[in-house]
Each structure stands twice: as C-alpha cells, then as structure tokens.
Amino acid sequence: MNKRDFFRIIRKKLNRFGDDVADDAVEFYEEIINEKIRETGISEEQAIADLGDPNKLAVEMASDLVAANKLKNPSRGMFWLLGSLALSPVLLPLAITAFTLYIVIFSVWGSLTIAFGGAAIGSIIGGVYSLFVLGNIGTSLICLGGALIAAAILSALCIVTFKYGLEFINLITVKLVRKIKKKTDKGDIIK
Image (tube, rainbow, N blue to C red; front, top):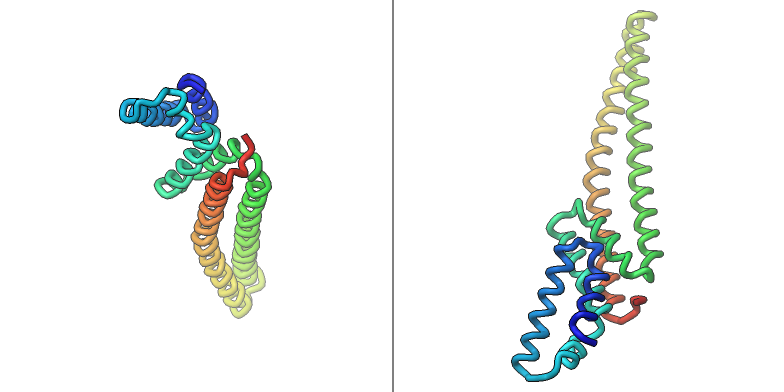
C-alpha cells in the first residue's frame, strides 16, 4: 500500500470528526512514515506495513479522540461518541443501551418535576382557596405548609437528579468509550 491509499483510508474513517482532525492524523502519520524511511532506509510500502492496518489505526485514533474530548469538554462528548460508533457498528447495541438509559434518567427527572411541581401548585391553590373562600385558617395553613414541603422536595430532587444524572451520563459515556477502545485493541471492530 502506498501513502496515498493509506491516507485516503485514514481520511475516510476520520472525516466524521471534521477535516481538521483528518488533516492532523494524515500529517501525524506522514511524519512517522517519512521518519521511518529516513532513519531505516526501508521502502514507503514497508514503512506503511509496519504501522499496521489503517482501519484499525483510525478506529484507535477515534477512540482516543472521544476519550480525550470527553475529559476536556463533557458537553461535546456525545458528538464524539456517535462519530466513534459510526466507525464501529459492532458497538451499536451498547449505544442503544446507553441511549435508553439517558431517556430513562430524563423521564424520571421530568416525572418527578411534574409530580412535585403539581403538588406544590395544587397545595398553594388549595390553601389560598381555603383561606379566602372558606375562611378556614387551619386548613389554609396546612395546605400552604404542604405546598412548601412539596416545593422543597421538588427543589432538592431537581438539584440531586440533575447533578447525579449528569455524572451518571458521563460515567456511561466514558465506559462506552473504554469499551470501544477495548474492542479496538482486540481487533473485534468491523472494517
């Protein structure tokens, strides 16, 4: 295989991450190939053969990019993860599982928000109604106290589920990236 074919494969596999990433990868491998040729005097084809399969190299680089970007910028981690999964359809069931967990987390969070928000609003309306229409101060205070308790639980649940939900999502994403890396190292990735 010559440089042109090698770089074409690398570019094809990494262009999902952007032209800059693909260009950087080509420059990186071009320097390595040129250095091998210069230092050892081997042919271009031999230097490329020594590097290994360009498909595997591209998948490894994609996994490294996903892991490095996830640590630097968690909000863009899913973009990189999806790009990496596009290179490795073997891991599609893992991606579906992770996506399902994301949906479950946000569904639970949304359900709790609606439930306790509704309870707080209903208790406030009931307390105000009881105070002004029925004139019963005791019932009004109980309803307003219940509203405050529901609002406090809503606030605590929102804070806790948001904080730990994001941590859980990041944990799942990082584990999935590690799984991609492990599959890449074993050579289980479909070309």
